[in-house]
Amino acid sequence: MNYQSQAVAKPYFMAAIGLFVGQILFGVILGLQYVVGDFLFPEIPFNVARMVHTNLLIVWLLFGFMGSAYYLIPEESETELWSPKLALAMFWIFLVAGALTIVGYLTVPYATLAQITGNDLLPTMGREFLEQPTITKIGIVVVALAFILNIGLTVLKGRKTAVSLVLLIGLVGLAVFFLFSFYNPENLVRDKFYWWFVVHLWVEGVWELILGSLLAFVLIKTTGVDREVIEKWLYVIIAMSLITGLIGTGHHFFWIGTPEYWQWWGSIFSAMEPIPFFMMTLFAFNMVNRRRRNHPNQAAVLWALGTGVMAFLGAGVWGFLHTLAPVNYYTHGTQITAAHGHMAFYGAYVMIVLTMISYAMPLIRGRKEAASRKSQVVEMWSFWLMTISMVFITLFLTAAGVLQTYLQRYTDTPMSFMVVQDKIEIFYWLREGAGLVFLVGLLLYVSSFFIGQNEPEETAKV
Amino acid sequence: MSETFTKSMARNIFYGGSTFFFLLLLALTFDTESSLHESDNRENLTEQVAHGKRLWEENNCIGCHTLLGEGAYFAPELGNVYKRFGNSKEAIMGFIKSRPVDGIPGRRSMPQFNFTDEELNAVAEFLKYASEINTQNWPPNIQG
Ligand code: HEM
Ligand code: HEM
Ligand SMILES: [Fe+2]
Image (cartoon, rainbow over all chains, first blue to last red; front, side, top):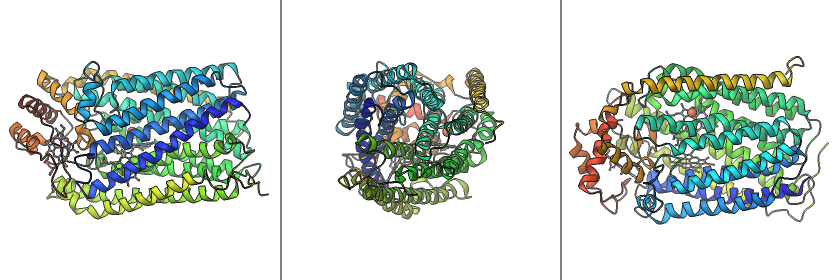
């Protein structure tokens, strides 16, 4: 660690991992509710557990992005962070606001929460992923502004690199597009249309800039490949992300009451969205193959390569699977969507945050380059357990989704939703099994931070 | 990547390309807004429907159901439930009203929301309005 202020990343990373554990616990609850319908009913109905699962995911990824930026920006800018105090204050505000929101979900009925937080004044609640009370949303905006101010001023006073610039553009975009969450018209079609300006333009737009720049940073650090080369790749990748992803938003405008021409725009442009993800895979492997040195943090290199592969599989391949309008006509809103959502979020955004944590945490904790061998071995085991079980979760959900699509939408004698769900129950049991393995992998991951702390640092193999 | 293709060329493609396609997205958005009234069923967007939408949101129905294919995949699609229930608001109201407080043993359960009659009617009106949006013939059949 070259700059003292980079250490503010530590609480952000710790909170991220803690909330990640919470997210997965609720994932396992949801998975069980799929097959044991009345499990925890009426104390924790499915919708509440789902809200906790998805909102924890978003919040911990945001913690991860912010921690990553606080670590990366001083190093790239070659100067201390503008205000570590502000960063720490925002950490506590965000953590407390997040915790209160989750406690609210779990302790009072959602309608009561809406009432006591004044949803009537500015109704924004009750839409998927945007369930947070309006006041929480305002809190998110405040934290985001203070955060961008902090890293923006740091970039301004220091060295300006492509990596930090791209990260900054991505983060500003994240904050700007979140503002659409405050727009909730009575017209359902319009509501749905602009809802995607948050959700799609995040994951298939500005977040890809964040993903690309974090990946570029870790590759520069661990491979020693010339910055010029890596930054050229970065620009080409994110250019393709926005060129395809902006109009690619149209793949959500096929059946929600929007004009028919979106079937063409959405299909054609989103069919090209896998390109930047494929380039990320090539990028990661190419840079590691051309490495000037063997970095002793093998775990971080593994996470970086894993991100390249899994983001392409989850977003690129599983996205393409159902993105053409004639296919999406049958698969829209089925378990195919859930399969894709899981692998894409895990492969792209979960894994890039874990890559950054893997690279930065040993340094923040006082190591020169890497954790001990023992700790890294455990971490790499957790990589494989989580990644392989996520592949299986995706495969089981895909099988469930194909059957659901056929039985409920495609045959000449379509069956009702609930009947079909019964018929494909076996795949939900298998998904739950894979989910439990994921949880074991995650606990192993957490334990890797406590194992081998007194052992010597791993050194590079020649 | 080859030496003749420089970093600054890549950067220009990024800025140029994303600006162009952002403007194209804006243009398409304006065009969509201008013709949306043909498909979004706004002529039936009454005060009751708006109230129903608020109830829909404040009870987080989307956390179990899809609506026009978006939401959660735990419970039936509701964009066309009005039609599935034989174009009957009463059937929808009766269903919501009759959910047992403690759920149905072993079966995926829907909460009892204790709506007033007026609220039930608003929710049903909202689902009726949703079912009349022009969705390019989606879903493929009545099962949703
Ligand atoms: C890392 C990037 C991505 C993430 C995190 C992601 C995540 C998601 C999620 C969570 C949903 C479900 C949204 C909902 O609840 O309604 C979704 C839907 C969808 N995604 Fe992605 N996605 C990514 C990239 C892509 C790409 C590259 C494509 C196309 C090639 C794609 C195609 C689709 C389509 C067509 C749907 C709609 C599914 C439906 O009709 O139900 N996604 N995505
Ligand atoms: C890092 C790992 C995970 C990520 C990134 C993740 C992400 C997500 C996302 C994005 C959604 C919304 C999906 C959509 O709208 O299409 C979701 C829903 C869900 N997740 Fe996860 N999840 C993870 C782990 C798990 C695990 C381990 C389980 C269960 C064993 C699980 C079970 C569920 C269930 C049942 C839903 C609700 C699907 C529905 O709406 O019917 N998740 N998760
Ligand atoms: Fe999308």
